[in-house]
Image 1 (cartoon, one colour):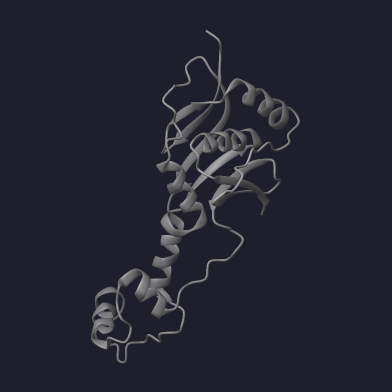
Image 2 (tube, helix red, strand yellow):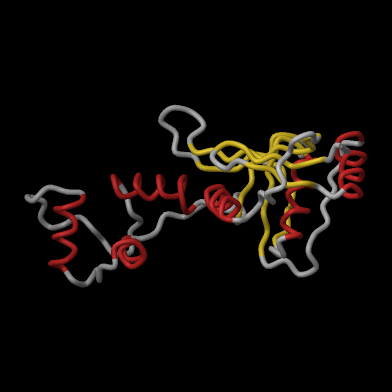
Amino acid sequence: MKRRDFLSLCGLVAGSCLVPDAMARVIRETCVLAREPYLILPRNPSDTLYALSLDGKTDFMLHLGDPQEPAQPPTWREYFVEFEDIDIKDEDAVRHWWIEQVGDPEDEPIPIKPDDEIDGAVLQKWEWQQEITDGPSARAFHHLSDLPLDDGTGSRGGNRLGRLRFIEGNQPGSNLTYVEAPDLATLACLQNRLNELDEDLAIEIKGW
């Protein structure tokens, strides 16, 4: 049987998808041999998938949302609205939450000022949520893992052209959730698959 090129999916998401022969030839010539990017972007993308790398050619980490815009911790007012569904003007509700979740029953007054940024254990919890669900790398992980990137054809007898890795916790004690593409060919294969799925998602390569 004729060997076909495919993109492999590994880590917490497993599978593969074939790359059309004509596309695979161009990706091999451009990305593998010439070490140049090859991305056929949708005409009117609805969002951008940023691929960050130190050298712009290898070891990309994917982000849905610009990772170079620093995440700003919310104020207490914003935090209560978004995560706790508590009206910060409701002193009894705030006090009950504080005693139950964070503080000591003897704290008086409750040390929360509505327009100050969250701090302490709540800030640590928010940062943890950024790593596993809400940050750009985590959003890329969850969005891509929810897509049918695996086309069900299998990879038996094929040549692996790219390798996309889905990672939750890259070392003991880490909650970092992200997708890793080792090279330009993987990005080209991924963009092709996103186009096949009509995702209107454009990959953009950026340096750290």
